[in-house]
Length: 386
Figure (cartoon, rainbow, N blue to C red):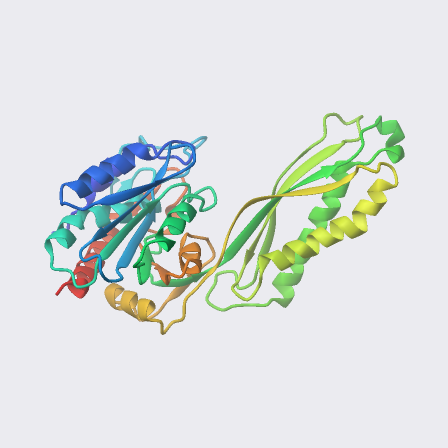
């Protein structure tokens, strides 16, 4: 007889909240707060500037010593333009898989944590359990920054954090950092028959993009490299470009978005400085020969630091024992773990589901993955109890 998961009903309720990043997450946060209240657990909300979204931080157990934090983001990516076989906001079981937006990324982990709240609350905890739920992770890890600012001010901070992003329950102690930028190329429009008298913003954007592509080739060929990643080197990628109004008008504006994803030994600011120097020193003087106000402006879009926690660190050793794992993994995608570590709290990533199923139509988590994560939570409960 197949095993069942204790967390199914909680996950069903969480999926029903449409917490797409553009929406408020307060309905879900209020639900969580009420759930914690049932067991006498106080929680604190750290809202955003608009008051439409909030992080939640809570402590279960003694407050006079550092705890272990369980962390996840409440927001999900949009379903716009995706062809789903079932209602994305109604969890649907098919062939041992639970379909619905966020089942994998990452309401499955949150559901397990909330289901185990009662167990933690009733246990005699030697090590407290902290809960950290954030917003706007999917749009640049924005929300957790406010929570970390607040946590910096509390007298006793968590001694470690497990971020439950989908890793198929692999203990993940490293991920790449990211910096994304929007470049606005300012040119001079004119009739295309007089093209040499204008400044073609698209063509100069193309030169910068070609330079970025050259950087990507160089990094792929020469490194530096770091073993353990699917892609062992830093990557450079241009993803969006917009410009021009008509073929017979030399375009005065062009905007494009690009990003760097870097291994731990490479600072993305150094790569950004390189492409910016090329644009400002090589191309801008040529542009200004025709129009003095031509040039480039640069707008940061998002960024987060990489994660790198030593294999023999106390937290990695602990989480490996809880996951019954002999090895660790590295992932190319980013998480809040890098920011948490930057705030002085060691962090690892370990959660149910595969990133291969995230962000797609018919997103799912396998019930077997939830069960594995629940056994992980049982071992954690035993470890932190007297």
